Image 1 (tube, rainbow over the protein chains, first blue to last red):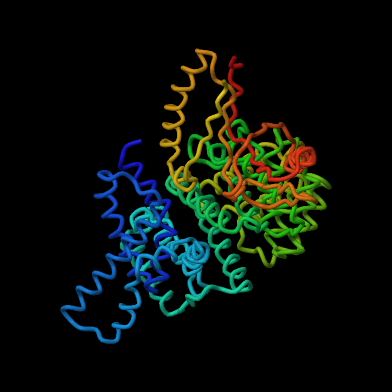
Image 2: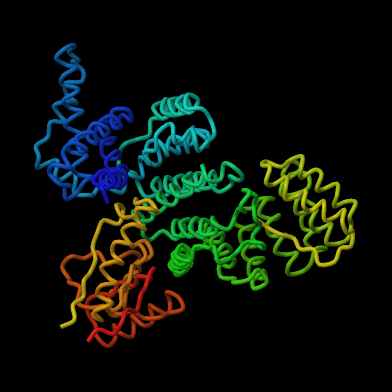
Length: 425
Length: 122
């Protein structure tokens, strides 16, 4: 590996800890970021000459902190800021004190705070994700803009707005209590899942561009799990992301069209990611403390374990969705469950299950896709056609629309109900 | 004499390699390994899954199972086993049996990601 690739990797991996610690010192996101940037510039000069430091994160924190303090002092010479005097002398610690601060006792809460600031409830989800990718992951505005398919200027504005809201929100800097910490953890987990879904739900031309979002979400989940080793839901989240991402290579055909689970070439699934996902589920289950991420991961695991689609344990999947319905009632969960029910108890039972959802899912593409497929299976072609037409009107991507059109073509070709299968993404 | 060579590195750092960088490192290593294989000197090689997948069994009475890797510094690595197990519970059972036969200390149980059995070195 070249020097620059090595240094890039070191700076990326040290970033959350370093920015988190600098944020604790300066209590200002912009100052912390700038201090980290300065430290990185110095690292690029110093590391190739002197070799890498033993602990890159501590090096960056110390250098970044000193650089920022110098900056404040320099500015003070030009225009005195008497109110800041106390804060500055407070920061002028001895090396000994600094070493004590770097001993890692703050490590967990620094990173959690940094992540939590990005997913503050005052921020809309799109701003949360953008901010986390910029601040925690260190992606450039250009990279983020590309992943979100918006202009660089628009993304710059989105991030600036998010930062302003964070300042208003005034997140406390004290070490959080147990209840507060667990709340932060849940919010951060949800934000990481959002980032993953941004990448996962992409298709067509944009799938490749947005794939880094999945990888970044996995990296953040891994970071979180290393800080909170004993949290079964974080293990579940990590497992869920790994198991879903393991199918990435099989999810699209050569034309960028979505390939449904039943039709995927399972030899393209990444067995190493699957192995890690399954290992994490094993660990989580020992806690006997179930949660939505664990259940969704267990469902993904049952798909991963099936070498052929017909080996899938739909009965168990039905039960798991049942448990998820109780824990997190949502029409979308019921809709997913109906797909499993159709495999276990037939299309009629599944249709009965989703009929009551019609009002709440009247604008949901997948509802009409599933409903159409069930009706088609039951030979109710005319009703199926109506459902498919509605699905096409609601499709979010051209791949989704193309898939439904395929069903419609089949419907027109042969109106016989034999052997039609319902597929699930 | 057989020597074990144990690999240590910063997991976050290795984890931030791109797929291409990771593959390049593995290719470089394989060149060295191939040479040893030809000489009939290489035994099993394993790349472990990340420590987030690790569980630790403290060999107390009763044994204590903890999430995460072995983190103490006052005990030293003395040996290791590679065992084929269906799942973590089975691996923990094996570790408990071993622990009963030799109490004290701890076992870290970590799934293996990549494994090459290697030749049989003399």
